[in-house]
Length: 101
Image (tube, rainbow, N blue to C red):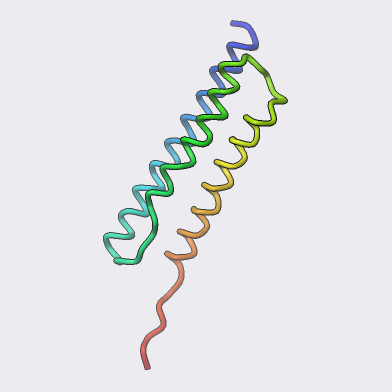
């Protein structure tokens, strides 16, 4: 196995890990929505795997080991969206409602 095909395998593997993480977070957000009836926008967790997948596919198709700014932008954008939405979900779940006086 040469380094290019190894890189392709690792790129697809890392995309798979992002997809699994997003899927688990989507299920957590959906469960929280059903239990608390607070809007979590859980379907946004389906978007980061698509964005990161474009970057992973670009690296896999063009046989590059790095340096593709478009692929890097997709990777960064997808992971940033995932991180921001995860932080928002955590903040929402940990925030307490004020009791009416």
